[in-house]
Amino acid sequence: MRCQSTLKITSIHDAPKGFSRLFSKQVDVFGIQVFATRRTPQKKVLHAASVLAQYLDNDSDGHPDNELVIQAMRKSKGAVIMFATERAAEAVDIHQYIPERVWDNMSLVGLYGEETNPNGAARGEFDATYEEVLHLITSAGYANAYPDVFGEKSGTAIAKAMDNARGGHFRKVPRRYPKGAWFTYDDKTCDYACQITEYIYWGLTSILGAQNFRGRLEDISEEWRLNTAAKVKKGDPSLYKLLTDPKYAFPTALPDGQYSPR
Image 1 (cartoon, rainbow, N blue to C red):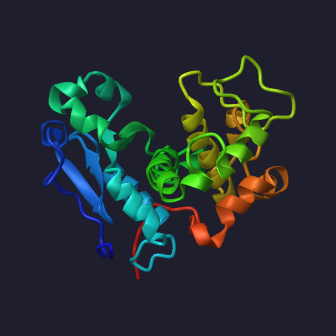
Image 2 (image 1 turned 45 degrees about the vertical axis):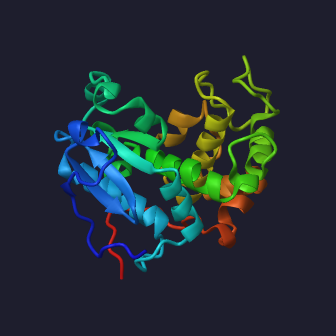
């Protein structure tokens, strides 16, 4: 599927049951939807959609770089949902609008307009779009397209690399990580599959340069130590090899939120 030359916000249409009661607009990116509430700023919605498009079509030729990943995302009904603020999201009983059976049958990631920061690095602010959109692509896409390699379960290639990065195999977050571990995510609500999602995010965004700006390493060092491509290549060669292997077609350039296919 070719992406339209210009991403456009439209009124919500052909959406899953109940979505039109909560979200008022959407952007289609290769058949993957970004849904947003009325109060979510237009420019933030377009930025999120552009980052999604650039992750998926990193060479900007108008076609997805990895069709298997796109197919997996569509099959799992992957989508991004956007609220203006975290407070706005927490104030809503989602299942009052969207049936639980619909919600549970989709792969969704949430992104708030207030944490969507185009060109944030220049101001010393991280753009959460890089994280949340990538979570959707790897969890709904790569994990299903390559289950033995990127599957979010014990024994896959990415899981073995993560176990090494954490200093051991931990089904749950340990009380304390072993000395020498460089991936030490300690959110106890994040299960083993979630840890893999976070691990890939840290690795790929570090390789692409998203984690390398003034003050960023100090902010993230309690979770992740390898914030540049050189550090990942040297410190976690297994992860670096997986994420730079051309056959998987991961992005090689950091999106700037200005998707303009040739």
